[in-house]
Length: 330
Ligand code: AMP
Ligand code: TRP
Image (cartoon, rainbow, N blue to C red):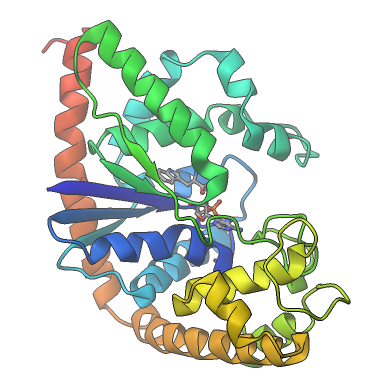
């Protein structure tokens, strides 16, 4: 049995980028035999930057309903909230004590996020990767589906696991990142040199899974492209159009070259109209299911059972770790 695990922060409406980078590979793995999926809402990670209480609460609930709406199969997948399983903080501390400040300061995400914090940089922003390592190592995850931007955090997780195993004896499984070739880095629709991000101040840059369908379609139609008007995948010279072709390919499972062929005699306008409709259908389907889950009592039952199972696995691993280090009495 292979174990697949991923976390997503409840730090705003989740985007098409999150879906294509992290949720789609998860759903792909869910279809395979002999897998167990653990999916969690990384609320402890979200508070590394300031969060407003009421907003955080509603984002957690919204994300839980959205993950279910995207198609988590509860026969194979367990959904829980990170802060409800305290073993994450506990192993997180152990991982922090086995990390070096220098290696944490070198993380690209830390460097990027640090400059945006006008009211001071929290220590948690720096120690975020050892907590993420704990999230993964607690469960002996084999595969971690993530977008391209998390690759470096997966590498440090592997380093920390290996470092701990060398120091204290075989304890953790060394996990692999699972990053898809298409869709692992969806770019902003307004500025294709930037990643599509839910914290973008310009809402035209991203499509939220909960965007009004017509608004989402308009965002595609007004996406920044170029004036060449030839549908050709060329990341360097046509970054905006190539990003749209990537989205098209990921949502329809068509090869990039097939899409070029279909549209070889078409205009950008026709291509964008078709993509807008594909996105419209995709969002309608997810939003219908979202509306069901967000108002259903089932959600609490699902999150309780996810929490209990996660605690069962995590507490056993944590006990082993404490024992190996010599913490406490047992
Ligand atoms: P976050 O929103 O930072 O919690 O990211 C959740 C997951 O979505 C992570 O696996 C990210 O790598 C992935 N992700 C975020 N933004 C994008 C994007 N623009 N393209 C592809 N994957 C993304
Ligand atoms: N750091 C991830 C992000 O910002 C979220 C995350 C936290 C995560 N813990 C994880 C992802 C463990 C995969 C596995 O996107």
